[in-house]
Amino acid sequence: MKKESRFFKGLADETRLKILWLLMQRDELCVCDIMRVLGITQSKASRHLRYLSNLGVLSDRREGVWMNYRLSVAPGSPEARQLHLLADMLRDHPEARSLQTRLAQCIAAKERSGRPAADLQEEARLLCQ
Image (cartoon, rainbow, N blue to C red; front, top):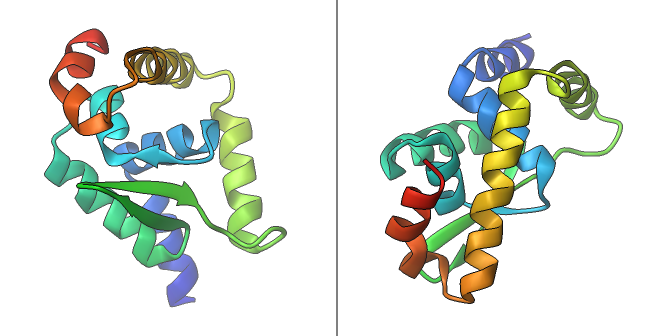
């Protein structure tokens, strides 16, 4: 039961829950987007993303200096079912809705500018506060 224990331990952290929720909203997110929406440092975001990756629930892809993350659980797996339950639990939560709004604002600002994420870090951080 070590694997299951590690999985639920991974869900027991508020920052990791928020990261998972954000990744449930989009196919893929840059670590810079997660940083801006959650108002956390790159090192904190990377530490939590690494933990989730080590659990096997995320995959990553490098784009320039930034890493992009996506959920990567096998459909129908116990982990996928648990993440589905988590999504159901958070769907109407006020803080989850606020995170959705902030994510949409950050993504829209990035898309409007047409500039790479690295160039937008400070500008979007200010927009998303």
